[in-house]
Amino acid sequence: MLILTRRPGEAIRIGDNIRLVVLQSAPGKVRLGIEGPLDLRILREELYAQISQGNQAAVAPQGLSLAHWVSGSVDAPVDLPPHGESS
Image 1: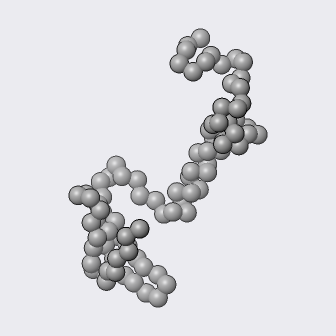
Image 2: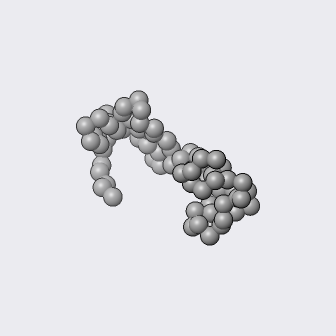
Image 3: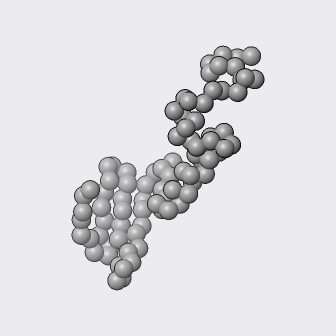
């Protein structure tokens, strides 16, 4: 992890097209501005975790943990053709 000290109005560049600007700082709180390409999804950590958990729950068959399902230890339902084949 790179640790930097910046003051309000100062910026940090990530690559060629992402700019992080310190807008305001107060005890225990920092306000950041992020400039980047429109196709780059930028999320707060807690929102990212919530979306990730929702996606995992949607992918795993009901009643199974995603880790158990992904490990391949669960057989596919009989009515589905094997992956890559059409019925």
